[in-house]
Length: 263
Image 1 (cartoon, helix red, strand yellow):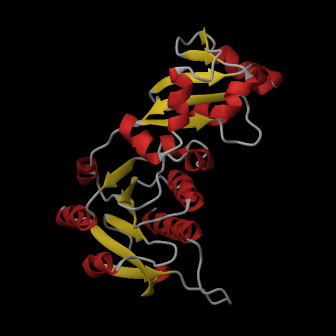
Image 2: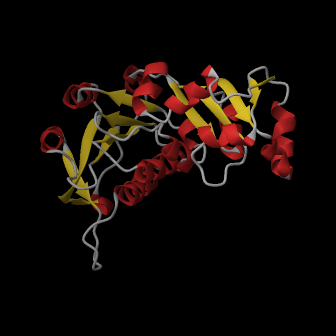
């Protein structure tokens, strides 16, 4: 364990840069804050570069117990509360954060799956929606999530926290060219299913084969380019007064129905 006493230390400066997407992807690093979610990252063998803590961690029984489990790790760094406040973005920090490395995955992995159930996020913008989708995907054992260009960064600290550790279990894939990516998926016999108000009600849909479910942008829905290559479209019937659901809720409802049908 080492101790850092200056906010100008290169390690502290590095952490501050990771609140920007560009820097996270340039260095393949992201921030994990809080006892439970860091514990989840360790349990799921996430590659942690280092952890930073303050004495505030030791103010609770949970914090003391967690510290006993990590105190001998060589990548542990101690700072005072004033420095920690500069590198965290929660209102009531628990006094611990970790810097972890991205887990790299190739889209080729999904082609080897039997009857895969995947999600494709088409320019999804809201961190809360993405957090909900990742957490629900974990609960229903979805095979992976593909994030199209223009979607919110899953390694945004707000997204990471909101997943409550699910981000470490759900395989995440990224593609720069949406049509090329989905075209390759389709060529491997995996069906593309879009969400649309003109689609078939989900309780009449067939989810038996391998497929990718496309969830669209919160305001614009699924883009026309993707809809044009989709095999079919589905919708959630809503007999009540609301005309729409947010993307996180809609995706969760469809994931549940698809899982039920495939069980």
